[in-house]
Length: 122
Image (cartoon, rainbow, N blue to C red):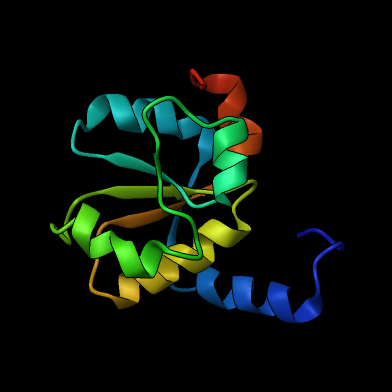
C-alpha cells in the first residue's frame, strides 16, 4: 500500500480487506461479459467521475453510497463491483454496503488506474 496515506487510513483499509471480496481490475471485462446482472459502481468523488469514468458505470460516491444504495439497488443480491482510483476507498465502501445487507459486493483492486486502459471510458 502507498506510503502517502496515513497509518490510520491504511489500518481501516486493511481491516476492510479481511471482510470484503476483491477482484482484480483486469478481470472486470470478463466478469461483466459473463454476468449481465453485474453492475459497475464508481465510488470516487463526483468531480473525479465527471473527469472520466468507465462507460456504463454508475456514480455512487463513497460519501453518499450508504444513503442512496437502497434506492438505486433494492435487490441486495445484485452483483455490485465498486471501484475508486486504486482500490482503497472502494474496499471501505464495499465493507459498509455489506454491513447494510448486500451479499454480492466486490471491491475492484487497481480501480480506475487500470480500468481506464482496458475498458471504454467517457
